Length: 102
Image (cartoon, rainbow, N blue to C red):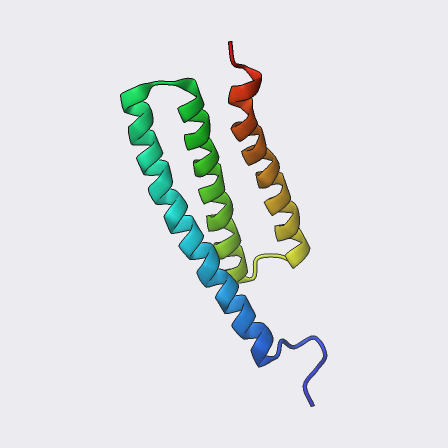
């Protein structure tokens, strides 16, 4: 009989699917970050910079989650906490242009 703490096949499949999604999202965000940085270089408007930084932080979040889940570097609760902290930073970067607007 399997131990209650051993993951079953469905659980492993869901973990692998989550990793694939995190990697896909990270790659998409890396592309958006590069495109945004290019737009900022042309435009030099501050709000574009904040959006680019939000994409960059979102990329880092997805990469950390993918690596962490792949290598089992901590409890799922740790990733929930890290994800929430990254979300807070991203939200701050997205709202900042409206708060500092002249």
